[in-house]
Amino acid sequence: MHPKSLVNIDDYSREDIFRILQSAARFKQQPDRALLQGKVCATLFFEPSTRTRLSFETAVNRLRGRIIGFSDAATSSSTKGESLKDTIMMVSNYADLIIMRHHLEGSARYASEISPVPVVNAGDGSNQHPTQTLLDLFTIYETQGTLENLTVTIVGDLKYGRAVHSLIQGLSHFSPTFNFVAPEELHIPDKYRTFCDEKKIPYNEYTDFTSESIRNADILYMTRVQKERFTDLMEYEKVKNVYVLHNDMLADSKENLRVLHPLPRVKEICQDVDDNPKAYYFQQARNGVYTRQAVICELMGIEVE
Amino acid sequence: MRKELQVAALENGTAIDHIPSEAVFKVVSLLQLQKLNNRITIGNNLKSNKMGTKGIIKVSDKFFREDEINRIALVAPNVILNIIRNFEVVEKKKVLLPDEIFEIVKCNNPKCITNNEPMKTRFHVVDKEKVELKCHYCELKIKKEDIELI
Image (cartoon, rainbow over all chains, first blue to last red; front, side, top):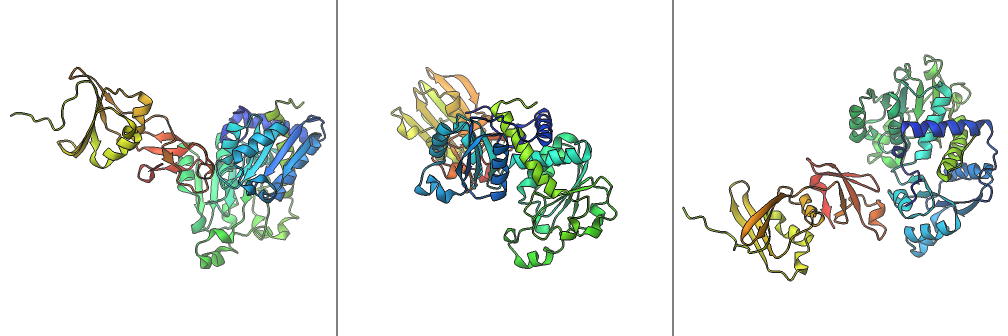
């Protein structure tokens, strides 16, 4: 196993997180650095994810590394029945780093155990997507000047939302307060309530999305309520327009509030919010590149000055 | 009153006592006793003051390693191991649930890599008291009543 892989946000301590954020900030000031000159990075996307792949590939390109890989499983040997192990062993002969997105949960942990080169988990099923969390934390730090003692309102699909679960874990080091806003069917799982209780993290739960749950927030984290998550389609029809952010809902919000979203956005943030200076989701996506540059260098043992 | 032995005495070997009746044959298979050539006596549905009924397995000339015997803690957590030499119990051991369990438990998540790749399963025991496991790979937590053996 390669000791330096990033599989789960839990793999990183508070100090590790700060080190990554610091290095990401350096990349934001100067993104073009030839730190991966002569290195090959593999992007293995067994499951398509254009946004994440482009972000990682931009990160590698800005570091002057070369990229090999595939963007969906149809063009990989797994359609011929090759095991994940064999694919990883083969690719690690060619590449210095593996960036992997896979539909099966736990695939990234397994890959990191068998791979002789570092593995970055770019999403394993509904389990983990740690670079999303790091870019969220970077954006929160950038907009608030701190990660400590913030009130974070999270809206939408709190049951299946992988980004949400990892964000809760990632912020847990920094004494946050959470407001969870979700329809009954997509409430935060008990596992995360227990997690918050054990860490003594206060949280409020709402089923209605109103300016009330935004008023005291420093960060408003919006997510998509997806139709396919509902067993009862009537229920979906009832709630689909409830968890939508309109610009006027931000009128009473705090001056420092910023609106984040892991993207893609569908209807849950009205277009009229885009022009509000509190909207920060596109900058957040841009920060993904810097954060991934930082993660890649960390795993490759490259110092960023 | 004369106390009748429910299962014949053992000269040298291991007597596994206080096995819940329903777990006796699981214990047999977890310890792979069917592959041994040693003399084995299996008693089941024997009277027990503590448990109502219980099972006992006696294996002649066999002394299990800790990691072998701890595998059975999942199905029979309160089992007592009597190590017997020359008809005397020389040591009594309680079975302990290990911190990690390899190979014997199946992950209940059909989308877990362990159910889709030829590989061994691995679980962390997150609560020894309640017997709660967590898949090392997909991180699913499994409660005692949902544990499925491979």
